[in-house]
Figure (cartoon, rainbow, N blue to C red):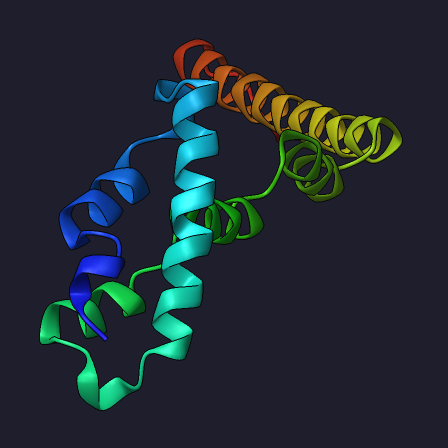
Length: 133
């Protein structure tokens, strides 16, 4: 069987890399029809009678197949949002964590204040000569 009945490799590559958003409805319908025809022609043509170009062309997915593989591998916005939501703490957990941080900060602030008072008292006592007797 001749390669003339088959879809041109350049056309197939061009259709595969061109996003559907840049194709008209007519282009998409034409691609679908020619992809189906090429798939049938490729399946009935024995592998040993195919040119290297056609063997390569048969290994390239159609634009629709490539788009489906891409769609299947990229999460939808809803799936991505759910993953993000699942990874974030709930408002209750976040509030508990915030309260723990505030409590720790208050403890450090009090410890720092107490130490400052202690040092100030020691300085005052050393200047005035007062202190524990």
